[in-house]
Length: 354
Image 1 (cartoon, one colour):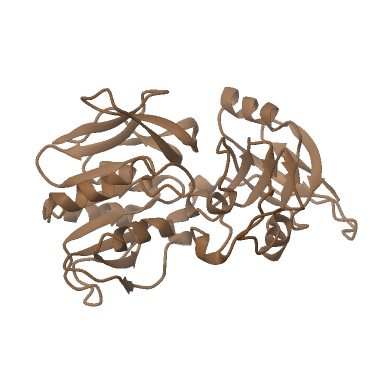
Image 2: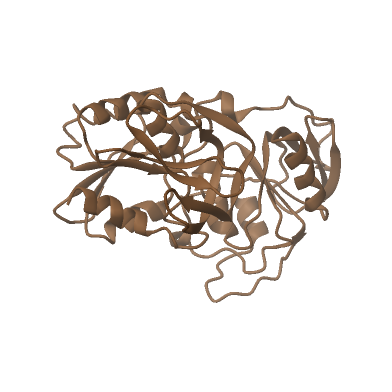
């Protein structure tokens, strides 16, 4: 079965369909990661996006058990690959990528020249697009409008709807779920703390189901951070109360907005497992996993300093308060997929209020 990718600049590229026989619209982005496609596709930060994998071979080790995913389902709206492998081999293999995509009604196209597609996005910037799958059983031509996911509050779509208590320990951390990857939770629980996961718009200071807590972690998530107005208001109150805070990815942007800073949309975003980030004041550079289309502006909020800087484009990669245990990073210290070089961020944060 065939299909095509249509970009808003009127670029049309045909491909072979190997996913669900459905047609969709979303924001077209690319990731340069060489591995970890199951974790990437289940990252809620990709909600509303058609993801192009630049690594040429995808599907070669299939899909593992659900316990290895970063959420309970595929979050990408659709995917584009250069070469799909339908004969995977791996000790943790449970199903093929194509079977997984079809079971969750996610379209996918095999388009050999993903390098060409990526060059278009790098030169013109991230743009909207459609995947149209040619279903022989359809009697009419498929057509629908482009869709901009950043005009929607995607955080509300992917956040948990309930309050979840996990782990044991003397310290209790509230994890504000803006689209949290599972490994953030695992990293915190493995460090001997109790984690209370709450919805993006939970009232941390009046909801008796939450109870007392020692610190807040703001998770990663999709879309424009300015859409998460309730989360920003909650974090602003927490700053005023001088509660320890750690933001991750979208959490970096939300912390900056809550403190009085600003954010902006990057031309084509950072989505990879090899983004170099320099620790300000040192010559130390870390290789990080990233997935975001927005960034914190250079004009930082009062009483905050730049913590990390992207060594490629100089964009902000983290902020830290001058005196309080309040900080955030734009990259993913929990990785999955990617290097675990910055997992020490969790330890650093916990030590600040232990």
